[in-house]
Image (cartoon, rainbow, N blue to C red; front, side, top):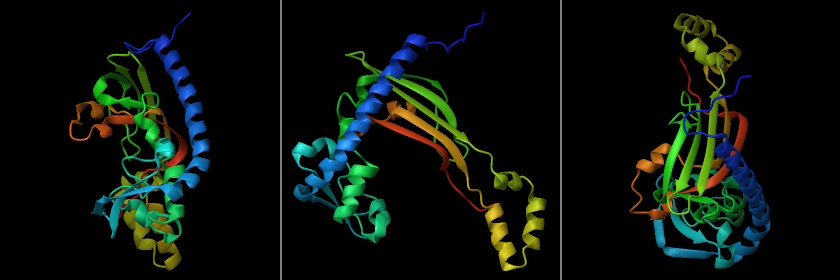
Length: 260
C-alpha cells in the first residue's frame, strides 16, 4: 500500500485545518457580500467626503476624493480607495454607461459588487497582517494571471503571538493558444499574411494571429504572496493587510498581442 507523500513541512493536519478555515471564512464572506447589497445603498446617501484628499487622477482626467460610508456601515466601506475607485481613475473611465466614478450607481457597484465588504480585510478575522506573521509556502514563488506566469502555490502565514494561521491557495494554468503556436513558425505566418488580400481574409488572419490567451484561475483564501514579506510598510501600515478572496474562472482572459 502506497501513501501520498507531502512536501517537507506540509502535513495532512495543516491541510485539513486550512480547508476547514477556508470553508468557514468563505461562508462568512458570502454572507457579508449578501448583506452589503442592502447596507451599501442605504448608507450611500450619508457618505463622508474628505475634501482634503482631493488629488488629480494619475491615469484619467478629473480628481480623486476619498468617499467613505458612515461608521455604522464601516465594514462595507473602503478606507483605501473610497467609493470612487482608486487614484488612477480606472473606475472613473470604466464605470458602466460612462457615468464616471461619482455617480450614485457607480459608487454602489464599486462598493457592493467590485469590492464588497472591503474593510473586512482590516479585521483580524478576515485579514492577514503581514508584518505580524511568519510565512512559508509550497510550490511556485511567483504565480500571476499573466501570460507565462502561471503556476501553483499554497501559502501559510502564522501570527507570531496568537499562532493563528492564514492560508491561501493560488493556481493559474494557461491554456494552449493556436496563435502562440503560429508564433514559432514565422514562415507560415508570412504565408498566411500574404494570402490575406480581401477584407474578410484580413479579418480572419488578424483573429488567427491575435492570441486570446486564457487560463484556469483558482484563488481562494488570503491574498498574501511571498514577495509581500520583503516590502516595507512603515509608511502605510494599512497596505500590509491581505484580505480573504475567492475566484474560480476556467477561461479567464490574461492578455492579447498581435504576433505579426
